[in-house]
Structure formats: C-alpha cells, structure tokens
Length: 198
Image 1 (tube, rainbow, N blue to C red):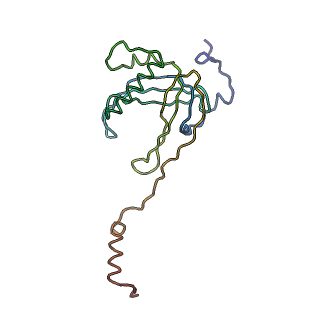
Image 2 (image 1 turned 90 degrees about the horizontal axis):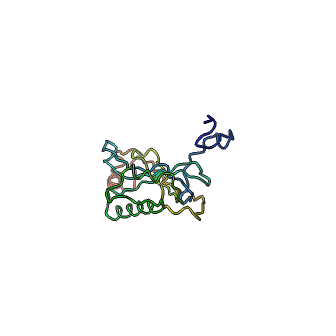
C-alpha cells in the first residue's frame, strides 16, 4: 500500500488537512454525527488524587460540522453511585446497544472485548460542556462530554452556544486583621467614639 494513503484515504496536502485545528471548547448543545472509536471498561485504582473508579467509556470521533475530526468522550458510570444515577447510566448503555443493534450474550457485566464490537457504529450525539474551579483556585478546568445519543439517520448537525464559565474570585490571604475585621471595627468605635485622638 502507498505511504500516501492513510486509512484508505489519499493524503491531499491541503492546508485544511495539514494544520492542527483549534482545541477550543466545543460549545454547549453542539449536535454532530460521530463514529464510536473506542468502547471500553475503565478501572482506576485509588491514588492520592482520588478514589478507585470503574466506568464504561466511549470515545467518539466527530464526522461533520464545525468540529469535524475532534474526539469527545462519554463516561457511563453504571457501577457506583446513587441508585437513580446507576439506573440512568444502565439505560444509557442499553440505549447505545440498541442503536448499534448489539445484543449481549449474557446478563453479567459487559467486558471491553464485548463492548468493542460496537466500535465503528455511527450515532448522532449532543455535546455538553463542564467546567470547575481547580482545587488550588489557580484557574478553571474545562472539558466536553456527551449529553445525548441518537440514531444518526435524519439527525441534524448544529453548533451550540458557549456556556458561561464560573469566575474565580481572587481572595486576599487570610490574616488576623481580615478574620477579625468586624470585631476590630467594633472595638475601635468603643475606644475612640466618633473622635480620632490624632
């Protein structure tokens, strides 16, 4: 096979195909047709940064729209959490299985080997945004997630609107003066009244 054929497509040398696209946040509510590139069970051991986690993760590649070529991940947390969250997550998993015409061969937890059989299926997805202030208050972490999954036939693509991110309030360092400000003001009034002696 020719070096200048990649994944069955001829390399064009066009600017649009050669330059890296901007990695700005995909706006809230963006709808796109996407291919499932990965479908796997993720198990993370507990560390200093967090508790142990187990969830199912899909990685979608957007096939059209303003963000064509970008990847977005969907976490389906159907192993741990509140009962209603687990039930909703399992419903999402079964919904995706139905969209992919996949029927499990048993009633046990799915494995990565089984889930990966649904790779290359196409779906219509709606993308959401998340943001949170970093633990050290040094900035904001942002990302995308898959909010909804639909049949791709007749699914219309559209670019959403950027969600507002929370603002970081820069607070001054805590000191005895700032902690006891109200108390100090009250005592000043008691000591000096309305007159300042100097």
